[in-house]
Image (cartoon, rainbow, N blue to C red; front, side):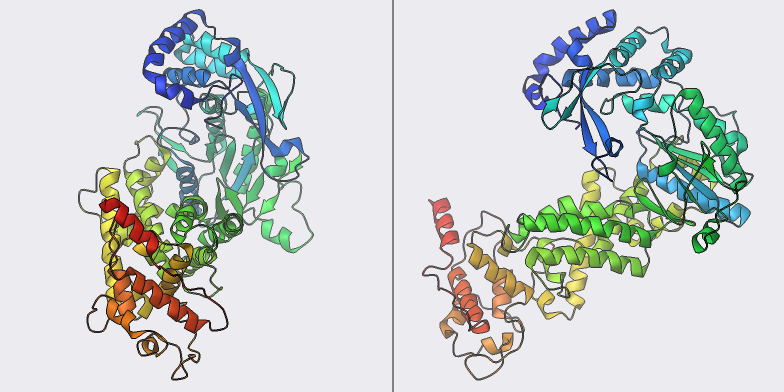
Length: 640
């Protein structure tokens, strides 16, 4: 929705070609808006499109209302953003949502570190209450934000009246099934989809963490205050990421914090959603799950007299938590259903052996499927069992690309398409995350925890992965150099594996980290299928009797089979001792999409056609009168 146009239907792509000339006009016009504290009415109109989240589709509460506003309004908001950040009250260090140099993974790792720190101090895991605010953006009392900005120094700026005008004088219409409702003016809320709304919401909720610190448990971890150097150490017993809140402490302190949360919501005009909240590690959660006895009213954790559900596992910011913190096994099991569902959808629309090419399929997988189960791996401590599970998940996806059975090997698929193993991908993700964590500002909570904790996951586990330890000193200073280092590291791994492996098919592949030319040289679908199936070992397949009657079908037998014309073998390039002629020919194909066709190309394809016919004598395969003609003709056109 970031690029979607508003009611004026003007897209950003329309403005980019004239951006240089338009910038002068917009600068002048924005100055007028600033002087008059007024913008065109169309900039203050939002078309709200409901995005389905989950649950019953008939319930309006299961939709997220996204506001589509004018691109010009977004440009104005972007120009106001630096000013707003400079005049806003300092955001609490517990807030990590939509702030520069912070991420959801940072906040999740902070929660894990706080849980572990609490355990080291008290020898028991803390109670963690995960809280959700009902219709968070829609119920914001904007007067609270304007008062906070006025007290922090924005009251004397002419930009504040303009900001108030942008949000108080808006009209909204709802878009459903290509129909638009009559416009109305919302009394509360900030527009979801606005550039400034995340920061404004952080200002709105900013007083909550300081309020909760009043009842912090004794074992709560302390960090230096980010407000000033003289403020001393402050306890971190809550984490906020926009409207996702987690409070940490003993059962007693969490109960007191929930009372304060309730009072805070009543004073500011929002409301918690008890049905979507959950409590992890409550002392009575295990006994309650094994019997029908519920916690007594004195021990019950509740909001608005509504008991909060007790759970043994909770997904916070997309990452599963158990009583000890982050859970890698749960992460794999959480991702698997969604990954396989997306892969099945792509498989039906062409990501299969009968649809797109294998090279395109592999790129679609790497772009749309793999990121779905990579999220969270950068901060996870994976055991050998977890690594095997995540590798198996990738293998299941790759088998769908070629139509392999459930136990078929995917090693050759990954090699010829240059798809890395998940072990290598995890090392890359962890290395990138560790390098990023080292460059975070000292005011970030993750940095504060790293400097005050005697033991942290980054220092003890993440930085011990082999790829990070192999980094040169100093580490690559740019992303381009870092990618080059990753490639060199993986090239060494590939060469090492190819020289030490006993797998015949893998040793037969090109000994380099490059896309196999059989996936992109000019060829018909049938010709490319022959090439790929030979690489995968599907030709010759099972060692059954050959139609020639002399032996079983095998790579060795084909060298002397009477049903394969002998001149085809002599047409192939001369191979070294110990190499198989077809494998050597495939590895000798020139690299690059503009490479010229080798003279033995048609003989190679004809050879594979004979082998296919021998492997499936019960099926009819029409012989191509001019095998390889597509590549030959393109080479001839280039030479002309």
